[in-house]
Structure formats: C-alpha cells, structure tokens
Image (cartoon, rainbow, N blue to C red; front, top):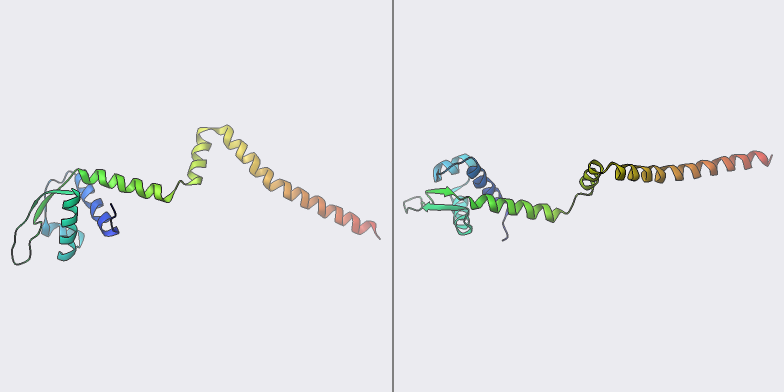
Length: 144
C-alpha cells in the first residue's frame, strides 16, 4: 500500500481519535478542526473507507455533495498506523549510535573495550608523530 504524506497524516489523525475514544465524527467538525477543503476531504474519505480506516460512513446527496457526512473511526486505523511507523523505521535503517549506546548500557565490558580501542586509535598516531618530531629536533641540533 503506497500512501501520500497527506493520507498518512489523515490516518494519524483517525488513529489518535480512536485512542481518545471518539466514537462519532461529523463532516463539518472534522473539516473545521483539521483544515481540509471539501474536495480534499471527499477524496481522502473515499480512499480511507476502502482501506478500512473509517467505518459506518453516512452519505447524503445535497447541494454541497455531502459524501461522508458522518463516520466512525475504525480501530484498524491504529494497526495501520503502527504498520506505517514500522515501515518508516525499517526504511531508515538501524541507527548505529543508538545500537552502541544500548550495547554500552547492557554490557560495560564491551563499552570499556571500545573506549580502549578508540583511545589507542587516537594515542598511537600522536605518539608516533611526537617521536618523529623529537628525532627531527635531535637530528637538527646534532648536525651543528
């Protein structure tokens, strides 16, 4: 299922309403509260009804169109939102820094070992550069 950012935003809104235990929503309240135009609202409602994000949709045909005059948020919207969040998280890939931090917290020996090797990787080049500098200084003064 490929969703646009606007559709994902809509599903987040519906899932939040389910979690807040909202049982019934009217078209006018929803449009006012979330700043949708009539056209955007109708397109989204038709698609979300097909996906099962909303249920018990009431339709009337009046001068304004009147698609989805009232509806009930479906508990399926929460499950769909969790799936979308999971797909987004796996698409980004694992965060190496977070993995290291978790490893440090769960096993202090691993943390000390990593810190030791980091220290060595910084200290060895510094020591060799210092020894090279000292040898050049000694060589410079020994030629005179």
